[in-house]
Image (tube, rainbow, N blue to C red):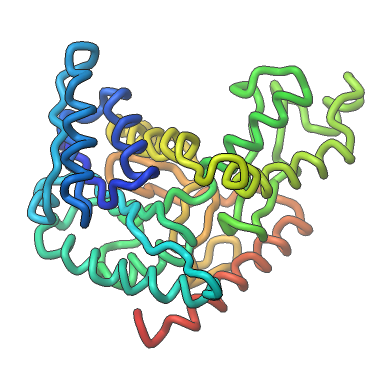
Length: 315
């Protein structure tokens, strides 16, 4: 039963911005912030609460793991930062250890019907780790995946085509990272395939599409170089996922989920179009991507699996 309660673990830039964006959306009436720095969580909660006169009734407060009880969704935005000279794999192992502790605390208090949403990167591997560590059904472990990447793709298609992004349908699938795949074979603008749109307008050439892919992949790097971190876009993506669950919308988003034979991939978490309902990942949709994109998706899955294999002694 939906209770209207979300818990966010990790009140850094991403976690606190997620809380604020979810609060503005009005789908939840209770938001608990948990952070190792209790004072930071208290300050964020106080700051957000002062906007109560402008919003639907909502209680925002700093909590602890016992507040995971009766939560509908628990968002994990906690994690370690990369140290000087540390490899990506070293960082990954440290973050899995963080998740191991966090998941153990969550499962002490959370109800069996809770949905856990990892947001910390590398999100696909941490989504898989959360599935293994929690013991919950895979439908209740939903990583933020490539929801933001897909939004970036639609924005850039809109910019190149001159058509509203809401009328541009496309997906980024696979890893939330360098091996992600743009599903051009199923992309359409107002019902027209990219090839048909180009033939009618002369816009969105093959060169444009390559440039768009490159810009999507490099967006986070560019933002981090300019301002140090990304958090507005991912907060909007996380809020949208939560809204789909809260409203039992059956909307389709490219969240990270553990696959069990879909697209010929097993025992790995990565992003594909998933129908989201009030119970989580209702079903994985196997969209008719072409052979080239399927091969790239398998390559992306293999990269994720190789990282998972390096964590076997931890998870």
